Image (cartoon, rainbow, N blue to C red):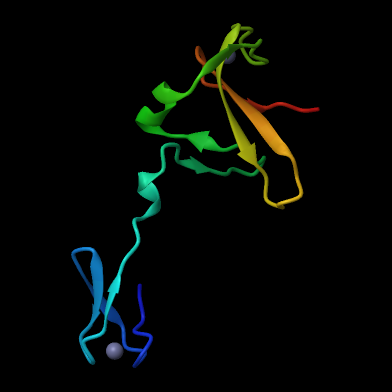
Length: 104
Ligand SMILES: [Zn+2]
Ligand SMILES: [Zn+2]
């Protein structure tokens, strides 16, 4: 939801713009997060879950799955919450779908 910076009214969406119906102010609306190549969401263990088709674009590597013992998994990098934390590598088993993070 957008609010007009001039009169604080709620703005209506019109194509790629948000338009104030009260004073006519127009503002470009930026693209939403669906444009991201990889959509991730957190669960309680800080392991993001990758959804849908995007999985096919991930690189794979030789690593042993702790769940089923399979030796190949997708992997990706992700920075954790704080900016001063280092990047963490995540794996997802190509066979059983188990997702886990690489610990130091
Ligand atoms: Zn307005
Ligand atoms: Zn597995």
